[in-house]
Length: 287
Image (tube, rainbow, N blue to C red; front, side, top):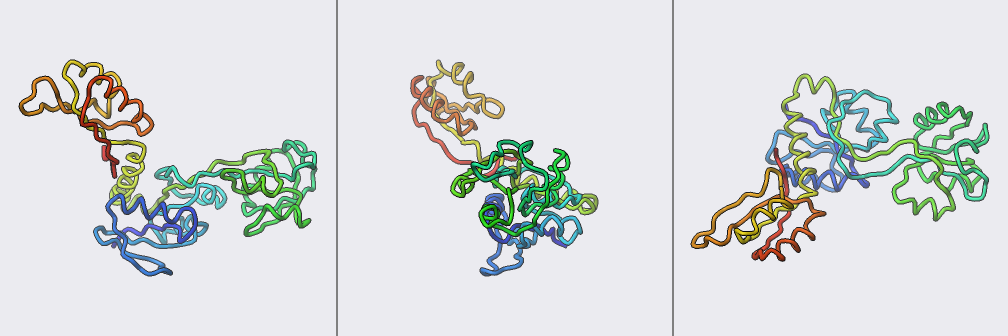
């Protein structure tokens, strides 16, 4: 029986999840635009396309073995699933936002009895109870930012990425309830029964994530500069150094470098007389 992995069927998490699976070498069969599931051509894996908010429940019940969804949705559900990995994309925060010019600059300024519109009633309730605030929560399915101006709510609790939507609607953020991003989760019983297979799939996904912030650098370096090169290009376990046929004065180095360090590293190599510098992306990094 194949491992069942649920990914969001649309939205901000869908395309990135598919891209990561492809980079991990898991080629998903084309199931059409409205596909509900697809097999992987070169692996014992079935991919289910579900609403992001349903994935936690499906994983918890064991209908699927693993899932990629938002950490905010895991927290909101309150269901017990095993988090395997933070995915590093889909970053956002669940925040309290109030209309500008209403005299509310912090949670302490919110009057008891205020109406809060949100798609996250459970997290919202827990937050305000912890703050000692008595509020009425109105659960909505979207467009929370318009509710204060329709008279439906006094303030909102909603997901925020850049904050531009809040500014456009003359709202200001006064508190952060939780940070979120995409996460890889698994069913706890499946972990006991098929832990090796689940860990192997998780490892393949993690290897893609680990590689994304790295670059593979190759260069021909004068032997006299090699000690200095080692000082600023440590790589994973130090640069790989290879002799060049017919040359005693130059060696070839291969090294994995943080993407953010590439610019300075190349400039330093050039100043040391390095030539033939080549930088390549890395699909996966398997320890």
